[in-house]
Amino acid sequence: MYEHILVPLDGSRNSKQALDEAIKLAKQFGSKLSLLTVINNTNFYYGTGAAGMPPSMYDDQKDMAQKILDDAKKDVEGQGVDYELSTDIGNPKNIIAHIYPDQHDIDLIVIGKSGVDALNRLLIGSTTAYVVRNATTKVLVVNTKD
Image (cartoon, rainbow, N blue to C red; front, top):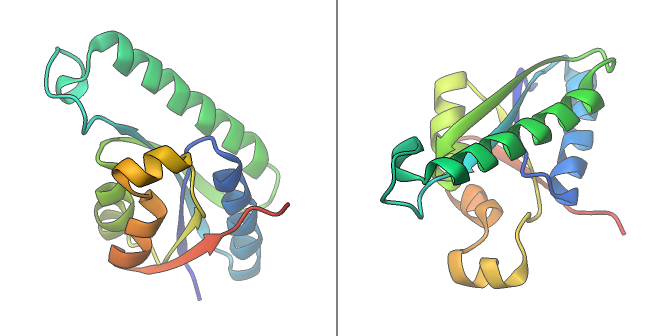
């Protein structure tokens, strides 16, 4: 049913639970997982780093993205599922909802409820909400268990 599942990861508890759910689905359907982090450079229009991001900030974001993927790799290794790790740079909303799924033939996006705090959701909007409204493929939103 699902051949290729995208799991956007931001290091939050919600994205970790989305990964856990995606692993279950991948086992059930024999799906490949794409584990993706996105370095958000949309708030920067100056400097010499990636697309205008100050170099030291880009280096920090790149290191954080690598840590998120390393942690995810530990969770998925040994689970018997095919997976790939990716980092992209740009607007997370567009990359997750449109660009990555279209370029990689994604059948399903499994995403955590929200990875940002209430203030950021109010100011910039939830990436999850945007993906649900605008994705070019099916979306499964995973809510954190408490």
